[in-house]
Length: 375
Ligand code: T4K
Image (cartoon, rainbow, N blue to C red; front, side):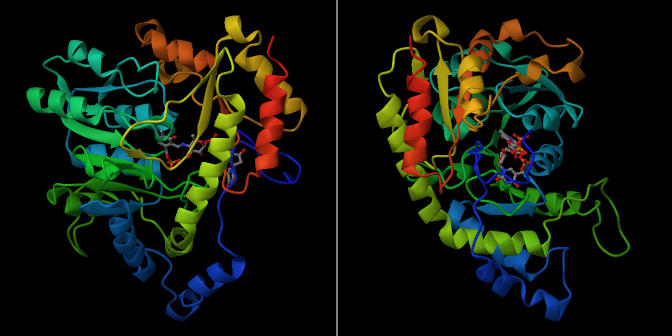
């Protein structure tokens, strides 16, 4: 974890997008008239409507963060048994499954785009399997058609962890419209933020009431509480940040695109450095810029590059190392050797700094430090 404070000269892995202060103040002014701070207020409703359109999804439920969106989304489906997922992800994905009393069954990842290896899913299905939770990691889109085919064949639910894919389109359709449901994160570090925040998108309208209840203590009305819910309501200040940031998000994505293109120009063809593929039929959001370092060919390890950049006040991150199936909290219950590609990638991946205001000169500097390490 990197702490805030005086980061003026540091280049961190990302930097939150923020509207002009005046724009935010204008947006929150009427909160002082209404004194309505939270509990599904007018800004919450307005943002929900705007996001439904922007994300091109049928139904949406805003929450206080992405993690609770996924956790409550799984709860709303009333699942029991085993869930096939990947360990190459943020802690949240696996924890949301486990906290629902479900058993994660770890599938390996595709060594090219780091999403679930669809050729390995069917061999993991048992009579206890109830769902697949694939991750569109770094904004790379999973093999949606194949996941859909398998889910139909075995009657499984599909809930995408789409935390990294805000605004991504696949075949011209909003990425959140695939599967039974998709979770987006609007955390400060994401392409679009509401400070903290997130949502669950879904097709089946019956989840709407259930999710509404689950994010509000299970309360049906003033006198009836018929669910054991949580508190995951997005407040009005979060929603106001979202309303402001949504006005600028397309512009921010275009700026990210320029930085990504520059990284690609600089690093493309460097032996021992693998870049993420450009996926066909995908309108990207340029969320992350991962490189995978093959130390035998490049001549330096991922960790050496990480340390070297740090010496220059450049803070790349090892997303996602360690794998979630090696976390101490699971006390050796899972075996990372059963997901060899994920293990290989997690030991070699480095996500380079990327955000809308990262200048091309800074991208060149970061790239130069890396290229200078090539042996
Ligand atoms: N699924 C996936 C696949 C995810 O990646 C995530 C979250 C989730 C689910 C859960 O969604 P949320 O519940 O978070 O909405 C960060 C984020 O906290 C986390 O949201 C994100 N994934 C994960 C990949 O990264 P850390 O521990 O690396 O954050 P931290 O505090 O080290 O921040 C990283 C950098 O971001 C800092 O160096 C500077 C910048 N930053 C950070 C903060 C907090 C800012 O510019 N502004 C800020 O306010 O986890």
